[in-house]
Amino acid sequence: MQIAAFGYAPYRLFWVGQLASNIGSWMQLVATGWLVLQLTDSPAALGLNAAFQAVPILLCSVIGGVFADRFDRYRLMLGAQLAQLVPDLTLASLVLTGRVQVWHIYLYSLTNATIRGLSTPARQAFVPSLVPRAALLSAIALNSILWQGAAVVGPTVAGVVLAAWGLPANFLLNVASDLVNVAALLRIPVRDAKRPAIGSPWRRLAEGLAYAGREPPVRLLLFAVAVTSLLGRSYTQLMPVFARDVLDVGPRGLGLLLTMPAVGTILVALALAVTPLQHKGRWLLATMALLSVALAGFALSRLFLVSLAELVLVGASATAATTLTNTLLQEHVSDPLRGRVMGFYMAATQGAAPLGALPSGVLAEVLGAPLAVALGAGLLFACTLVLAARTPTLRALD
Image 1 (cartoon, rainbow, N blue to C red):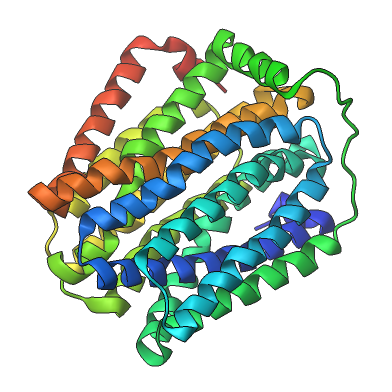
Image 2 (cartoon, rainbow, N blue to C red):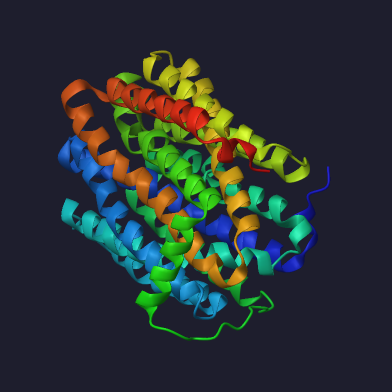
């Protein structure tokens, strides 16, 4: 099995550094969710913490897209990673000294989301400069592993570390992962195209919005990925509730619940990385429908092993949908507009999912977590049917 993107050393360095950083982030995500639940004993608090991540990402990803089309993308990535060390070290110190309060976590989520929002479009737009066009689908598919795939290691280790050494160790290991990513970025040969800094940032943002609005493929793809993220990925923030109250499996079970979607992610990402795929638009709609069915199955399950199997399918279908969307967008957009379109894409993926967690958390408080997740799955299936019936442009994309 030959993976095209790994044949290029700059991409390998980029991928390894991002993987290390994301493993640390997943470990901290598990520990933070457990800590919020300990401090508040409230599912709504988990949703509120997710909302503090959503708003900055929604706003800052769009601004970050303008930056990515105006400034050096490599320096934006490196600077953001160095800046991330400050809030990570601060939160680790608060947890280590036992002084952490829930508002500290909310403030951390706001800061972390702002940094991510401003830098992720540059990271996404930088990928085509690391590999030739023929290896672009392979690189984007492998990028899918970087977040969900890191969960194969991150949550499992986090659960063990949480049970053996407590919360502080997870936060300290996250700081170590930041340093690994910085070291990897410093070794990448910089080959970033120069972009003229003309026009005000607001004018360039308006230009990007006008382009996304008038191009049917771009508009439909952004809507599809926003719906998928809003309704199909917000369940992650409720995992501590499923682990403690629904399935009664504790911290180690929580790690496995968060790991299983990543198993599906890795399987489908590797398949897309090595297999040419035709009729990508039809596959996109099919994977959105499959995601809604698998998510409903997880919500209805009360058996731990069945829930784990359903989550593998959830991770595979969600990753396939977002990877296909990203690939189609990268292929349709020219480089001068790539950063802004990737900013809109990141706002839809990383911003919509935690934003959807707020109403899910409130519904879970009133109706229970299983019913809240099942309702989201039903809405996603309805939206998919509407897209399939009324948008032939999306079905025809390849």
